[in-house]
Image (tube, rainbow, N blue to C red; front, side):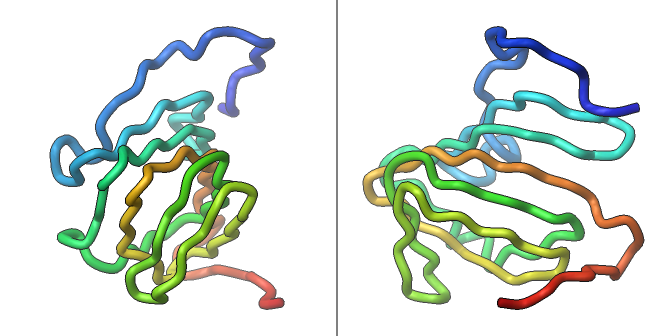
Length: 125
């Protein structure tokens, strides 16, 4: 199965809190997803003042691409703030976050599982 073929339409799934109530002020809206492969495209929104400090550093087993569409996002570990127009491409196992967003932000996120466990096959700039 693959992501569905979709022409312009209103997203079928509404905004949902990520991880239930574990991370205050963070919402996502799935735009397209393949339930078998785990491939997905979604919008993610951090409300003003949202933070993931309690969850700690984030590490996952899938590729993740993120484009900040509006607002700002601060990586607490790096001590850097990222703004609209900035892009990240994270291979499986890449450590990132935790995050704070004083003003809030909106991001486009693309998730793609790694073809095999432990494989990241990435090139560094």
